[in-house]
Length: 263
Image: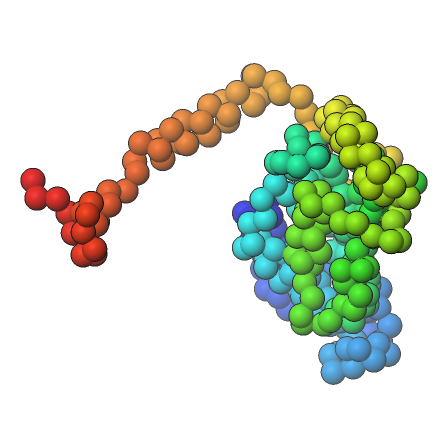
């Protein structure tokens, strides 16, 4: 989950062992770069793939600390330039839906344009192209600023678009934009249909070459024998936490900190 995966990219052993010898410019993730890359001219060409990979690790660590609600994200195992995610809207028109998405990061990172967001699960939304699934976020990120713009900003914006649907003059889905404008009830019905279908489609693996990765997110139906023990342990932990509420150190009616009633 985005809030609890700080060790996803952790490497074992000496860092020097993974450095490519000589003029090899192919990194551990298969990232091929040109030695004349002017954006990284201050770095030895052999180290550029590692520089790119570790800056993206930093981006993921920042995302992990943000604890964005209702979203699960993990980078691909084969390349740091693709991240997989699932959004679980907790309210709004898409409540109870389960929507897969991919983030595509340009190989010129961090000197690049805004990452692309592909919503894999079919969705009726003004900003999502009904054919390609790409979500239009360029209006929100007209310029990607190195060191200022962050990938977690992109994910946070995508998440908000599921709750507060923006109105735009250049929609990716004109039908959805028009329906949202003139017939909100019918639009909401379309959203409900998307939610119900997403609950079925989540158990299917979309047939895309980018998804042929060990870190691609898979879902299974609940099986008591497999998942029951873990579920009960979570519920028990939640119950224990609710019982062990910390005592207040401020006596009711008093403004004195750390005060307790006289017993």
